[in-house]
Length: 309
Image 1 (cartoon, one colour):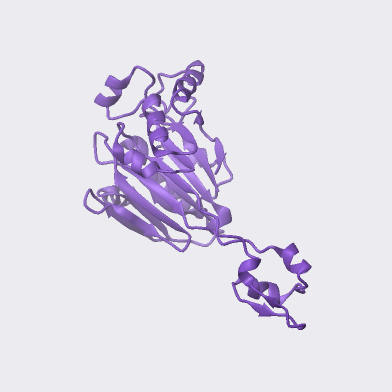
Image 2 (image 1 turned 30 degrees about the horizontal axis):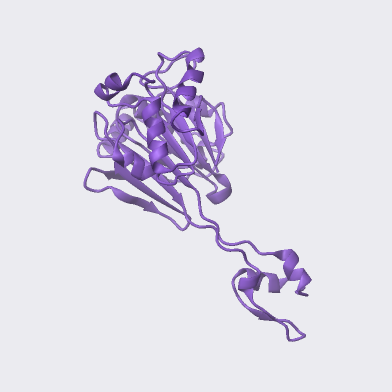
């Protein structure tokens, strides 16, 4: 499980940072990639990665500001050009209005897709659990931006315990079908009458990962709730230390406020994202240094960076 950042800038693209988009790569878990936001130029950034557009099965939009959605029509159209691959449907989750934006863009441009898009729109009254599969659950909660905006909490369900093959061999269990039965939790009896209790040879279930990905927001309690005990918290850091007033006026957070959220939530790691173009390369280390005085395990991400979870 990895997160790859396709755009880490705020508002408009710069030479160093494209606008918002990141990919949650779940290839080992479910052979899918989930995209969060799709700012202008996202498909160009994808060309610089190993991500195959057809593997993108779900897109989660935080809000309808242009720097988070203007790349959607282009990406969706280009995804249709993978003619040598099977056409697969795609789900888009986002605030009310995302369906109209996408369909209008495709209609006006005369674009026809050989796959179906399933839209899942929500408003302030229809948040909470928005997706559940056999391996993942996704929650959304409203944040505090200048327009309706949400953050997402992706929870991997607990992983099955692992089979202790060496212990089984030492107990005299021959490798083969019996291993499979025990792995499935079934007790077995060997030819010599020895009873093998499956529970004695399978480790306890391992807790799944929690990934919190927030849209643009002022510091708010909703951010903390979404990030409780998260393995990774991706939080915007449009402004820096001392910029609290301008951040509030524009519906954004500072690096210090993001660090406060991570600390209050008990998150394990904080990734600062959505960086204003006002910060030059020499300023990035200071953003991290300042935030680390509140929450130590913090990192300022950059475009195309890949973070293992």
